[in-house]
Image (cartoon, rainbow over all chains, first blue to last red; front, side):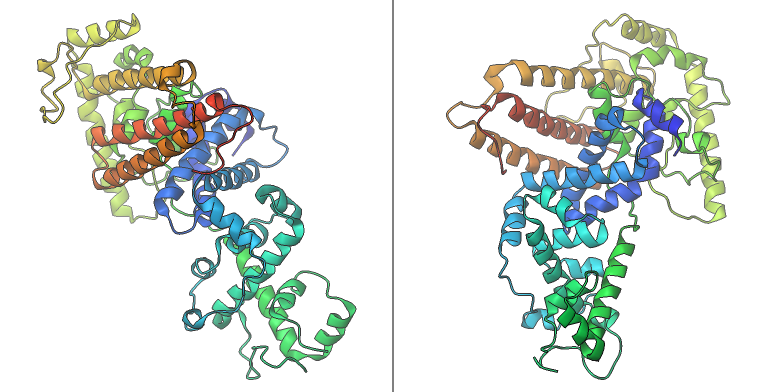
Length: 190
Length: 304
């Protein structure tokens, strides 16, 4: 997407705005979909709000980062804000604060084999899921996550490692090497 | 040393282990395997970042909002924005038939109506634009069929545009002189025939004109809603517990948006449903603005 298109969009040219949307909606909307999870209607509403916000903020775009990166940031921030405004905020913050939550799979989950990361993520608590998405998928640092979610960087790390541990269990057939020695840590000593 | 816990294995996948952990990892195949599994998980997660999806958002609804806010100042009047203006010169995206919501949003604004008289037979008017909503590979015969359909539709509508009678001129004059349009509104619950425009005191000779008039009214309505939200204190909830009142209103509006969105999926071409949806989305946005304006400075709505 060239600079001229962005400049025309800033000037209020609908055609340029539409070009930006057509180019970036598949990616930006995917970010929203990931963060919202399993509520397509809510995801669609938030995606709409994200794009309104992107065009509202476009005059402030300085070109220091790629447009896709800039829009990506807005998508993440706006989605988190929207989730904060919904009932999910309480779930999210509670999930993060419950540091003692077990990472071990329960009986039902032991028999569950996720076909993909996307599917496995649905099994995580909201807090751990959000931190995993922000860190391992979206590339945020723990300090940035802490700022976004109002938690400590340590809390972010703790949630991330719990999330990874649980996901590894759910995706063992995909990520564990097929060795015969077994991968469970049932034995505490070597 | 004991095996690394599940969480420490997750940590050392991309962080430095402690000296003890490093020594243990050097000699324990089980823990090394666990760490490597986490590294594969992280690599897979990074790939998720590049995953794209069919757009959840809808340009018609977005552009309507942007127009209402005055962010769009130059409406798109091209035949196919993505195809004609693609800077990379890539092959045009296969067009999909738009929903009515897109038609409403893409219809020319009143000031553009007069200009559409200059459209030649070789150029389809904006109201006939078929725009891409989703990118998907399609076979060549489908492309040819779509192109033929577009050509025929464009020819038919261009013919209709060129055959406008004097009433068209009158409508255009009305719009350019900002004379208010006063079409008859059928009683609630009745199903007036959509095409029976002669029962209305205003005559529309094309759907493009009717849509332009509707867009004008819609923009006026949205602007009025925004103004009232910012200035009419009677619209604000009782001051005793404004946070709770806003919470209740937003929850109700969320339900309305959700319901109208579902209705839109059932009847994507129905302009009434499209307008219900737009209205509920705008009402929600207005309420969010009210929250910013009306709550005391020391009070915040933190959940809905």
